[in-house]
Image 1 (tube, helix red, strand yellow):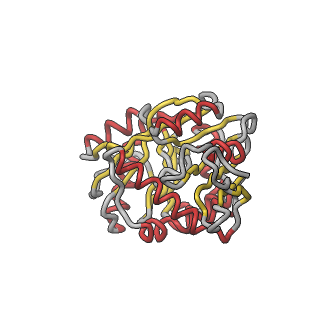
Image 2 (spheres, one colour):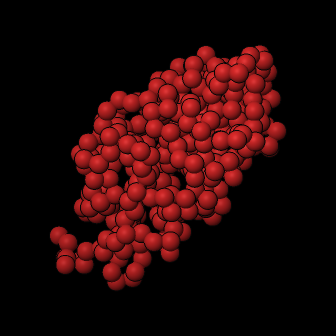
Image 3 (cartoon, helix red, strand yellow):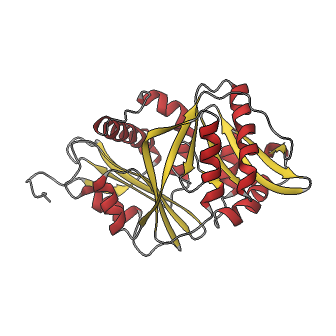
Length: 306
């Protein structure tokens, strides 16, 4: 079958483990190309992105709700892919990329319809770039832009805590997934699965914060990225973020980046006061309906999913 230009249409099929690295390369090529065109260049080589992101790419491949790839029938080269995950009723598009030079020919529409079919999920969510063509497709996929997500970063420093909260390592908890779920049930409505918590703990330090015996929040931080972070009450975020920054400094993190919903005024103001800057690249949370309490939440970095 030929497309409108007379060339043979790409083959679309389900992704397999053999496609993981090729998909990562498409992600890097597409994201860095968009960064250059928006005058918001992204740092790092494809190998550096793979070194930090490989465990999460493999996790998304293993736990995908849908994963579809587009293959050039002549060369066998992958030219695009789309993937989603599901946590209970939360259906989230994690990746949607078509190689530069192969976009705007209907391929993206076909991939998105397979990986993120309309009608699936109680809540449908996407962390979207501001790229107009992609946002237009996401509106057609029954989502609406709810608010910007700010990337805020700086070299971390030791920060003073007021001592109101205690921080207990999640790795030593009897039920780490249950501890996180006790917060996410309130903050996100859709808690992470035990395999996702196990992956986070394998690659990041995790902490459960308490005021006395009462759980107040949780956080993850590591050399390869930060988040997610959540508090049951927004006023506890400054202490939690001071602890996260202090741990990042102790680990030798050169630049701590946090994916902060713009509606999280407490976190934004605290971080600005600590010398964090807002990156020019801004993402958007898109969803079919309002959900969660994002005034007390900070997402996973890099921003593949909530």
